[in-house]
Amino acid sequence: MGPGQYGIDNDTVERIANEVKDAKALGVQVSLVIGGGNIFRGVSPAAHGMERASADYMGMLATVMNALAVQNALERIGVYTRVLSAIEMTAICEPYIRRRALRHLEKNRIVIFAAGTGNPFFTTDTAAALRAAEMGCDALLKGTQVDGVYSADPKKDPNAERLEKLTYHEVLARDLKVMDQAAISLTRESGIPIVVFPIGEQGGVVGALTGTGPSTIITDK
Image 1 (tube, rainbow, N blue to C red):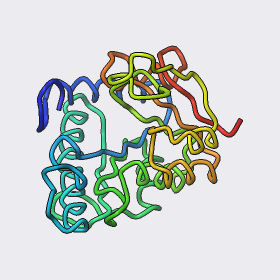
Image 2: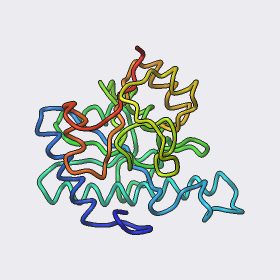
Image 3: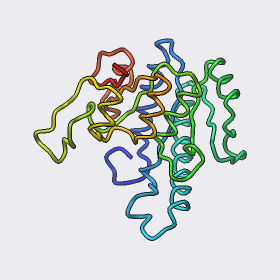
Image 4: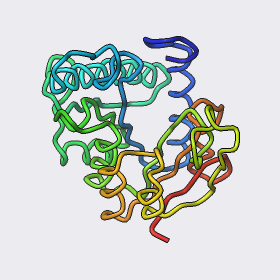
């Protein structure tokens, strides 16, 4: 949503698309898991009074809208993509099938995963961890609004300490709000390191991939 309060900011989407293109130019295979909080979040005040499952499904539909926006931005700059949704809507994107997703990556396309896991009560973080495990990814990069993981919310606590490196156990034991516990547990079991980086900074994606930008790395050791 860029500097706005909600919705899709085209300039922000275009910047991120160009950063993803730069990352792909490094020779890596890239897949994206898109959230939907800029449009609707199942646990937000806007969902107050709704049945949780219905609110979560609305949030999943929001991720599909964002995925299509990112796909459009990527293809305008010559990057071939496929959107695969965990909820079937064949008129606008492909249903998620693991082998199909792997085949798209083999064909040098960027795969955009939408609609989370397709199930309520699971976050987009968990969907990202699940897809990373299914695709056999070497790392999971989580773009956030800050430049890494802090001991507390840096926007609320001026004494919050920035942490360069953590273990999965430390994240769980200290209840650090990096990703939800299901996502952390899944990446830990799969041995997939997590790199938390600032999506709002120019060059953040390439910086996270190459280790030249600000980030926090979460591994088993």
